[in-house]
Image (cartoon, rainbow over the protein chains, first blue to last red):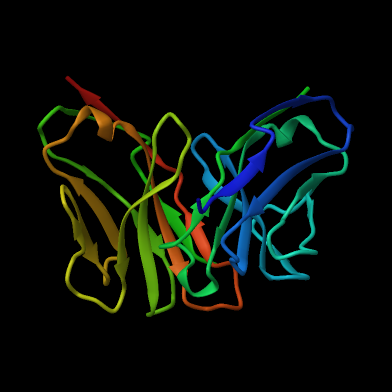
Length: 114
Length: 116
């Protein structure tokens, strides 16, 4: 089954404790992206990648890191989480020429930073 | 940078009635795509409908249709014969055809409630 697997689904942590949210896709997609969803602000892009070792900042990259060492994986790293990073996070993947119309989303990670 | 605005944070509709969700966007490009996504309480993101900017004909998918006004930069979603299962957050999104940039921009969302 074609899917984007994102873990964990829920995460509660404390300020400053490094964490990683994993994202893996089994569709050989070139494009992968991370979004955060906040009430009234919709989904805002954090980072995206158009292929292995190619990553770029989205609209809200501060406080986040990503890596794309393999085509299937695109982890999101919060080196020193802060309460303003409390949010719902989505990973998504797509063929590079079908971004939007063939965009597969993970099931989301609800992160709370205390 | 492109921006997408959904001016209605919440809308409600009676079951079987018709509702229209608004979306406006700002861009200097002529070639792009527009989308409407549905997010039910399960958090799953579901593509509802897409529109290519170069097509003048409005897209339709069963009970869902759009009113695409390119000059006005408006892209509204009409849901006909509303059903209880249509209750969800709806997001409008813009995709540039410029592969060099941030490709997909979402609006702030509209929460649709359907009354039985």
